[in-house]
Every structure is written in C-alpha cells, then in structure tokens.
Length: 230
Image (tube, rainbow, N blue to C red; front, side):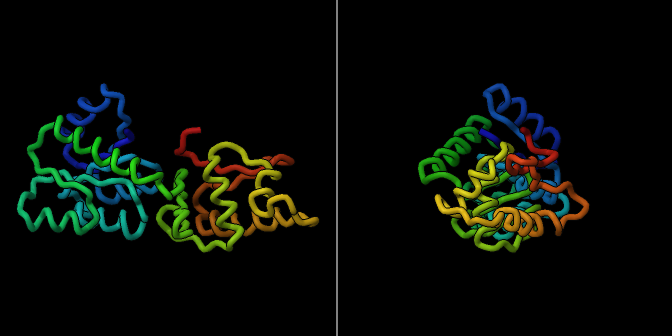
C-alpha cells in the first residue's frame, strides 16, 4: 500500500513508519493540513491516515477539501483522540471512510486500512488519472493542476488523458493522432495546434513552475514533473 499520513505528532509518525515499512508498505508524511492537501494533489495514494487535530487546517476541513476541491477518491481513515458519537459522525460526513480513536492498536489499524483498500479495488479502478500536480477525473472530465481547475477543450481532455496514462513515458505523435482521430488524421498538422492549446491550459497559468507538457523533437510529447519518479 502507498499510505499518506497527515499527522503532526512525530512520535505517532515514527511509530507508524516503524510498523508499516517492514511490511513492505510505502509511506509519506505531512505535518500540517495544508501540506497534506499538497501531497495528496501531487501523488496517488492507496489510503490516507488523517489526524483530526492539525495545525492550520483541522482534519475535518482537510477531508472536505480532499473530497470537494481535489476530487480525491483515496479512502480516508481519521485517526483522532476525539471519541464522541458527534465527532465520529462529523468525520464521516466530511468524507472519511473510517474512524479510529486514539489510543489504538496497530494491528487493528492495519486491518482497517487493508479493508478500505480492498473495498476500493473490488469496486473498480480509480477513475482519476494523476501525475505530479496534474489530475484528470475520467468520469467527470474535470482536470486540475495543484488543485486549480483547468479549462480544456474536448481534444485537450483526450490529449491530457493519453499523456497521463503514459506518464512519464513519451507518447508518439502517431499514438496521439490515433487517440484523437482514429485512422483518419487530418492532412494539416492539427495536432500541434491542440498541443499548443493544452500547454496554454496546463502550463501558462503557472509561470513560476516548470512546464509539464514537453516536446521531444520529431518524436512526440510527454509529461514531466520535478517531484515525480520516472
């Protein structure tokens, strides 16, 4: 499992790493609610362990933003000292999938995370394609970079989906033309125009960030990201 831990207590974080890493799980950690939102937008996780009491944004607000703003579909388990029925109901209504009260058993936590991930895998693949700061919900055709919604034309969505599915690998011009026009590509170099429009939507609104849509001269195009493994 790829597990994101949004928790500000260093002892709890160290305890979770000590337990889960030897089992072969990959962990990442954010110490604040804002940092957790950035991590969740930049990378794909199988499950998120979310503390209820965080500096900056509390766990309830983080969970709401994950669901409503970032359209994050990863299961969320809230791990918190708040133990009233009202607290549990508030967490579930904010978008959490499960709720575990501190102090807790690591074995029970592992079992609950396994169950959440298993439930998602049975229900079908995640409809959201992600790479670095980019994500595209193939069900709603909503695209975002760093949480900011992108305005794309119809061909822009198709191009972005093809590049996201392959990322960080290169996609040839022929493959992209097949994606857009099947076996009847236009005589003009229309692909270049659609790639230009995609860059305008994906890269231009972020002048301080590295462009993500890159041309490999004479071959095709690919997505790049400084923080994504290639």
